[in-house]
Length: 554
Image 1 (cartoon, rainbow, N blue to C red):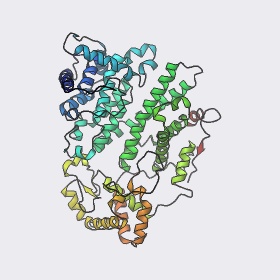
Image 2: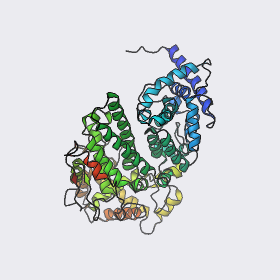
Image 3: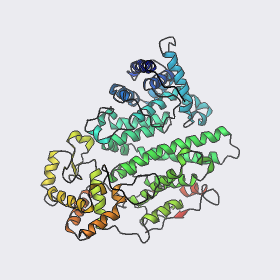
């Protein structure tokens, strides 16, 4: 058991961290002129934020409050990495990281080098980029070139781990980022291009994970640029390439223990990055924004989910922490969600063979013949959806909490509808067909009749739901958990399918949805041309997984 630190020891640690912070900031202040090697910068960074060099990089780091409030540090660190550069300039930067000209006799420099060197093994053993590189290219992926980049991105991810969307958008937070624009210092286009550039030169999923964290906070500021530069398409190609390489490694007759470990770890970290991305896009973004981010590669992502579930049955990969049963179930759930969301089940789409778990999940959610959602069920979803919305509810208004900031306010009566400012609120109250005065009253009536807001969204002292989650370990939204309770309470209150308020809210919600870019099945993009061939390596009789199944066209 480690000894408890004395007061004098804690003071010494604080002094050391402050010195390291001052040294580090002075070293990166000019993003075009590196004054110390990557090993030195990495050690100084870890010392400044009091991080352990052998800590797994993608473990959420609880950073000290003093660090989280140090806006200068975070803004300089992010700006250093996302400053627009050419590929040649980044290559020169990485070369500068690898060539040590530091004065080791200077105060603290030797300690920074030791700490930076200790961090190298853990950083490079995530994706084994040097191990897998061709002999003539290995120098480009060496630890001394790449470790500081990987660690720097990991620290930025940690800084964004606990950030809330609303406090940042309204500028009322005391930690970093203070506004969404802190995360796009050179503009959204430049950020996305730079992230893709970094991944090409330092191919570690931590680059994708940081982009995903930035998306979580910036939302509609970043989404157009992700679409413009086909970010999701690039990531899908990366995942497919690593998945194919993983299968090829598994097929080797006598792999070394190092090869087995490298293959497992590379695959493990790739899946972690993909899981973060899918969670943010599918679970967190508004539904019409899902299409904005991944349309054009949605079928490929669904197929990847199926392949990942198949590959999880290999015992050599099961040793990976990421491939726990709950995680594999999540990939099956994302595959099924995309299948329905993008209407891939509709004729004349071809039948696509998928893992039986995905088909089973779909049959559970949509038992044949496909059930038709009723107006009451739609309205339950609509009320909860608008409460969680971070965009203006006024018809055709493109503004969001990120663009409106403090002006973005939720109606204090119904607590469901939000506006970007007084102008849109006034327009909504005076709307000829759906004035908010009437919408507000109808929503309040339906919420009260259902049992209160806790049946629709998370509140303190929420009612307890007597249900089991279909996906272990995944929190289910209240409106899904309590759907049967709400319907029963409405029935007791005389609210049936033809109730005036119910249909009024339904029609209003459909009018808003009609102005947004929701997939309707009219457009579809095919998946991987060699998908079935790739699947044959994962299914019986050639592979290990269960026999594949097709979704029936409905």
